[in-house]
Image (cartoon, rainbow, N blue to C red; front, side, top):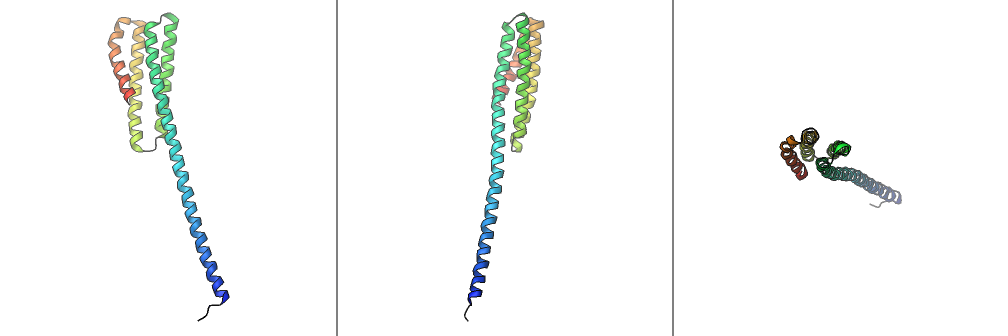
Length: 155
């Protein structure tokens, strides 16, 4: 049985088409998985960046409270306002990090951190209010505030 040239060309064409189709499918799959991985890496990077910034704002809130202790008059009120501003930025950065979190365990940990930041800010407000209005009561409010600061810094 002899194959004609026409039959051989048809077989080569079919083989070539199968080869091109398989390479195309493989390429499409590689590009799609690369795109998915790239978006996950970008989201993780954004979450890490926001979380690092949250640590900076946490430190700034602590510095603001220390300044409220030592300042008087208008400067003291300015430091209280800075504490509030830095606290809002702290909470915002943790919330943004949570929004970018890629997996459920990270989101759960950041949910706990959001709750802790809220408690920390509430304790900070209590402390700064006590410093401004009744300095003798500030001593009692200092220990819970510092403990929440350490807990939040540890997270």
